[in-house]
Amino acid sequence: MRRPILAANWKMNMDSAALGAFLSRFVPLVADAAAVEIVIAPPFTLLDRLREQIAGTAILSAAQNVNPEESGAFTGEIAAGMLADMGCSYAIVGHSERRALFGESDAFVARKAAALLRHQICPIVCVGETLEQRDAGRALEVVAAQIEQSLAEVPGDQAEAIVVAYEPVWAIGTGRTATPAIAQEVHAHIRGRLRARFGDAANRIRIQYGGSVKPETVYDLMAQPDIDGALVGGASLDPEAFARIACFQEQRNP
Ligand code: PEP
Image 1 (cartoon, rainbow, N blue to C red):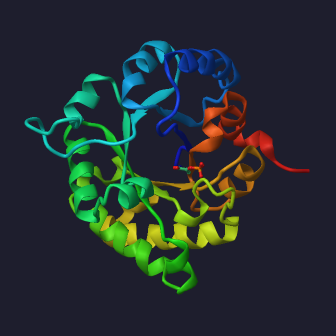
Image 2 (tube, rainbow, N blue to C red):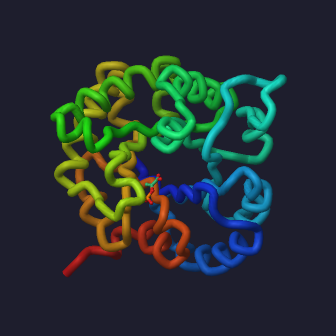
Image 3 (cartoon, rainbow, N blue to C red):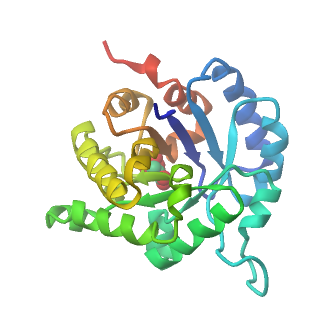
């Protein structure tokens, strides 16, 4: 059984006042959501405060990025050991915004994932095709190559610690969610690639869907056999909306 994982990616949003306001509304709303794992990835500046404020709850924290080096002259960067020191359980790597805006390659993503695993932090490894690649019929091929290269440095005995997030670039922040059938097709393909790489452990690796997930769309996505969670941007800034996403079983449309 794969435990559903619902993760908020706050990107470059929120400050300390907004964090407090969010949690005071959100925490009671998800108090009974014990069957799922709820993760919040705030900006680095809020990780310490988030850790303090989620103590005693089941909510876990994540970073939005990491540098693969252990320490040294890398001005402005944050190492995996520093995230472990902040109590992070997860870190997002390979988000399409970082790939597109900061030129991050699959090889760099692979080094980040390995660095996180060395510090017992679970990498959430993002993959996904652009609209141009989908329209050219290359979505499955592109995603398979990203999986192979971004996970190249994951040791076989740590495969179950990783989470994969399938985030079609054309669905991120656009309001355009992939249909459950489109998402399932890619998730099944990803699981096939994971099986080729890690064997039976692939059955225990969680694969999240991300791209304009809303309370209204989460139930049907989560009903797909290979969709094990959601990575949520815009809707996760609203405590009511993200709580409804976390409580996805209650969102079934009549
Ligand atoms: C994301 O950036 O990871 C994301 C899925 O964003 P949104 O939900 O806003 O599309």
